[in-house]
Picture (cartoon, rainbow over the protein chains, first blue to last red):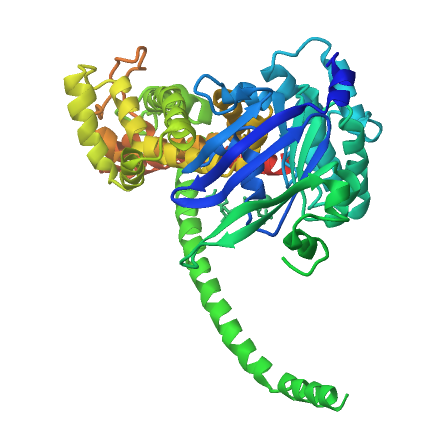
Length: 269
Length: 315
Ligand SMILES: Nc1ncnc2c1ncn2[C@@H]1O[C@H](COP(=O)(O)OP(=O)(O)OP(=O)(O)O)[C@@H](O)[C@H]1O
Ligand SMILES: [Mg+2]
């Protein structure tokens, strides 16, 4: 974390994805993905439903390991280390690369316990109250909950729950955060809060976000990847592919590919 | 505009068809049948309870004056619970049987809880999803439906003979454990299944190991459901007579079991014996025993409901 400034200047990449494909059983959900994800930037994944965005983002912290039959081919390196190397421990991977899910999923415990769980399993139990406060503050939730940290987290509103999930993710000090449609269950006000939050967090973390919201992608991301599905020759199966990966400002004004243009302008998808 | 208004008119016509009255008759007829069924069930239960209470309470209250030899007559619930059996109905206490049932409960809980929840946690959270696991799952459900006497025979063969525990309270407890283990495992698995997957994913995404995710998040969320299953299984166990008789529980025991290897009797067996005697007075004593058993069952079922309600409120 001390090298933050130099990192931002360097535009160093945090992930290198090479010829990646993911299949469930013998169904290939997404293939031929090649991209470099830049450190301390927000990278957005967009594309029509079913093109494999969730499948892809789960490969970055090996959450696909938990899905029966899911198989990853190709390589993803994280800071130069092949994430799928036999010697790599997925638990350590997930500790460094946090994930926020589409539906807020707080533990059915108190607000405080939601944060301390991650701290405990990562042996970060020193200054635990400070860590809780810091995480909740960073997630822009502290002022709303500081007086009832012992309240059950399920009593919070959906937007607050999602910020709590972000708080517990950043509490364990990861260096990348994966977000799979974090705002899809939220109203515009809560969405705005989380977008503002991302702009704060990106100073410290690299962020990958899946979104269906074009405005969200164009407003808040630095890079943008557009995926679509190609139907197989027999017409039965649809496999996701990366169409274009570009700086967001370029993507939303002068995209390289015709298809991207059509999707962004709403004429396709 | 024109089209719209005709459509509206049409829908109004279909509104007033007189069908409602027709349906209402059908529905109330159906409801009536349901009420009858419920009433029959409840009436049967009430008659049973009334019969037992009216016969048994005289035995447990002080103005009992029937017996010929009334020197050490037992006329209050506490004495009834602590006194030995007797040749005279008005002196007979349920002490040894009550103690036997308590012993059984202790043994059943201390063996069933770790094995039942352990098996459920393994099967639900850790077992590879292969043929063997599916085979075990299928058999668990089948075992839950096996008649209880079969477990008595198994207990006789395995615990009494093979393991050499004899006709002891330990053999009895283990036999009842076998009987309710499938039920408890199935109930515990249901409780684990009810914990949403997003909880598991949330824990793992924070860098928890599988073990930590299961034991610190999933199991605590499922504990109330598991305990409820355990209590219901236990209340089934203490009402069972057949497996204990088949296993060879002694029918006349007039001492308190003091070690797990003591011979024993249990409340339902004792009641069964008393009812077998020809004298009318024994019926009152037996009824008092039934009241005790009903009371125990009521307490345990209330406990299960209490746990479940508290848990639902927490969520
Ligand atoms: N656990 C799974 N098992 C089998 N197939 C799956 C599984 N998860 C996803 N798929 C399939 O993989 C393909 C891609 O799914 P994925 O969820 O990654 O799409 P997505 O781009 O995230 O869609 P959405 O925008 O609707 O969330 C779909 O065809 C889906 O049916
Ligand atoms: Mg998705």
